[in-house]
Length: 246
Length: 128
Image 1 (spheres, rainbow over the protein chains, first blue to last red):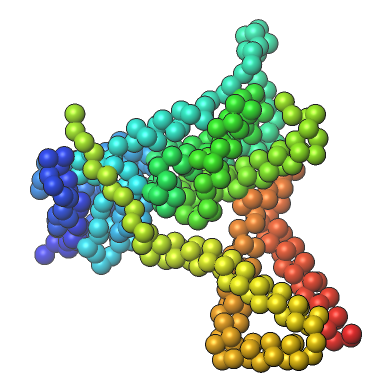
Image 2: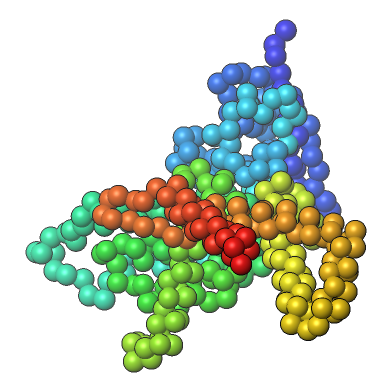
């Protein structure tokens, strides 16, 4: 007799009044992750189940879901770690649901764009001068924060995101600071104007769960607190030395 | 075009997961500390008045409910101190080139400062 495990999967269609949890039973394999179980359901049991996935190796960040109430990359979450089951699979918290396990990430994309997550240069140096050089120490200053894969697990873990929809959120702020700390970047002033608003770093109450669930150990909670220190320092500096205001 | 279903977070969000509950208790500890400080300020004020006013206030503080409050306040003070000390390395990052000062040192120096202050206060109480 084949060993099986039960899954309770969130189902929703836009024309439904309310969502429902649908129970499924799938084969249990030691080397299967939750995403394998979902793909089994789609291939064998119910082809109408909708969810996003792509790389299956924790790089693309598209298979994030709530697994037993915690935001997880389903390609990184083994069935054997969820025993005895049933495993509750839901769409990411704090996002609107399009269909089944698919959420609308458009608000996140807009927040991400707002902080200019790219290298901003006042003037590009001529190609003949070669690349912008960087020392290992300068790279170390921002490397950890450059690991973000935009999986949005941190948004699903953050209760502030769920209560204040204007909050820029962990990933956007972490990426903003990632470029601020990059020695090749010159866009810090533009980003600070966005980051230091109330809806930026000051909405964060330091719950810290964004860092706890991050599969790439980016530590957005730490980044935001470091940015708060910078903002406070700048404010005091402009108070004590008003001539330094630019 | 479809309308996405909004999954709003209810006011009981803090009970959804243990880490959220701990955070709420950490934030709540500030309120408890504020009440404790208010009681302490009144105590200092009474100490500046006559002995009768001071003794009367001490009697109030020894009421079983006030003793219970102080026990709870102490627990919250420990929670407040320990959780914020643990979080400090997130905000304070000391980096020298590629070397980053380990979190342990950031936390340890705060406990060291706490112990020094505690020793100073204890010495003041014992020797004066």
